[in-house]
Image (cartoon, rainbow, N blue to C red; front, side, top):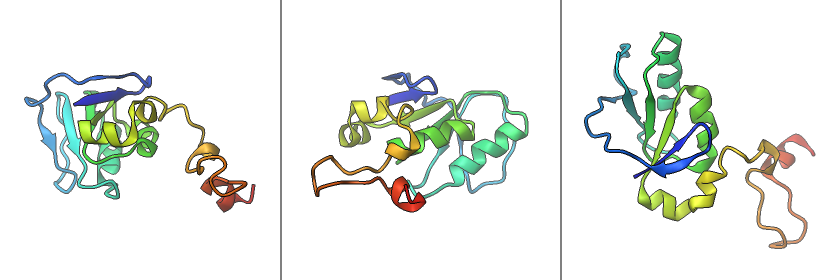
Length: 132
């Protein structure tokens, strides 16, 4: 298991098996210690809402995001209140070390751009949606 922190550092994660797991579907309670919030799928945004609500309630412990997230969601995870995004070996292999390491450096207009030269002049989805 790997971890991406808010500074963009990608390192091996320590053993976190002793941490409590927060189910985003369960009623929230503020916990004193560090915790893992599990995402059910990459389209399941309840984990982001849960982290935001816990931070708003005063939680200062370390929050770990765990589950099938993709690099594009890393920035939102940190903005929502997570301290660390956990990345399993399969997701690291699928998106590449650089994909995760650079996840926080990509500016929004560069996201979702096709590879240069694949079909002539390419524009990103951001540019298409905003007419740029």
